[in-house]
Image 1 (spheres, rainbow, N blue to C red):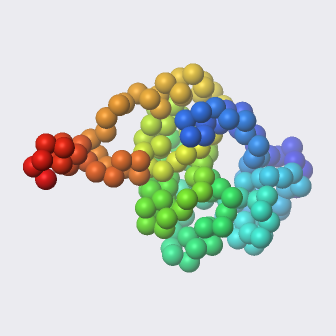
Image 2 (tube, rainbow, N blue to C red):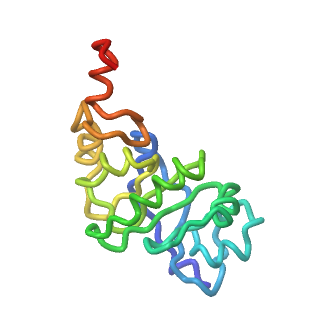
Image 3 (cartoon, one colour):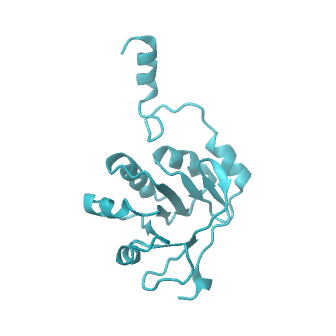
Length: 172
């Protein structure tokens, strides 16, 4: 596959900080690109998972099972695709990987990743965010810190605000 068909996200935020993206992205599912390191479709990665310079990307309709999660545990990173900003299934995939299957590595949001989504993505377990090309880094960094308190539990804070208040007041 010609490397000219690879996507290169220019703006990557990892753990809340801008970072140089070293991974290319291939959306071609029938041929491995020559360039490394590269994120490839899940089916292609499963065939070549021993290659440490390959990482899988999961479509938003991926069905996670214990067997698949066990295979993914060795991936250098897992990218989850957002084909449209209105498709929220990627949030669930990230949360399942973190909470149910205990994945500790990088989970990266790719695709239609907008500034408005970043805070919520980080609460669901994404620690790397590849912004859509038209999104601005300064806006993205501000959006990550837009809220100081969350009402609901997430991957980052396990108890709801009311539970924290009850515990802190001694009524729990």
